[in-house]
Image 1: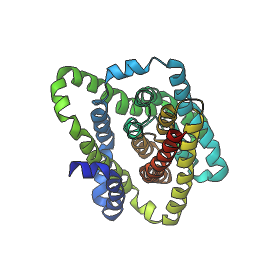
Image 2 (image 1 turned 90 degrees about the horizontal axis):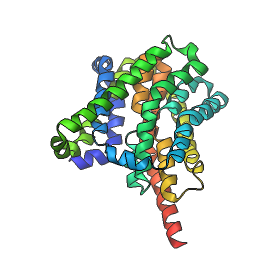
Image 3 (image 1 turned 180 degrees about the vertical axis):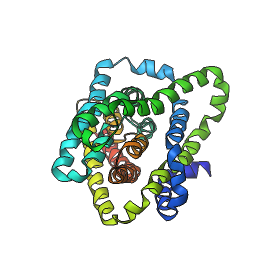
Length: 306
């Protein structure tokens, strides 16, 4: 049962969307707690990170710095202007999504796709630690008028959901390593259920707005499919001279950002249309690994024949 749930976790994300819309009065009760639930997700994810792997990966600092700059600086700028040209109404949601650090599961995706796991792992940690400073900066520069929150308030929120779980995870691994080793296989399942409650909170809070704008939701989703596909291409092209394993890691860490943080961030500081956009990107995010996996298999087979 556990493996079936983990392999079909996107169904739980979709179910959360429907639950939030069908029973919004119940769903919105979770909204005040999503920051703390996200801290739990980050904590259990970071418990699986091996610090020895991080040290090994740091042997190529220039390439890693290059990709970190692509993820946290180039990507938000490129897609901000892309949204301004194509669909200005979702520019705030687009900027939030494009500014996010690499998702914790991007390392797992890279592993499944036979990519360079060490590069993906260090990029995930590095971008997560820098994001509390870079995201408020871009929000202030490009769309500061859309939120009453100060850059400091945003920084505090992001620090809370990233730094505190990271420190607690390190301390916990030192205190009870044997316990973590025995229980870590259950962390993905636990995180799936925690993600369910993170999704339904903002959806329940904004259910009336979403139901009144279903046609807009369809258009926004289509826009984000184009954006996600473009992020995959960008991630692949910026490492064009590297071996296939590095290209996979590059594309994965750039395309699969930590949307959960984005949902919490948007819910705390932005309007319902922005929250709707970021939540809808979660759906796109869940579906895109299917075609990406198919393309990678084709490329891998082609390289083996050469």
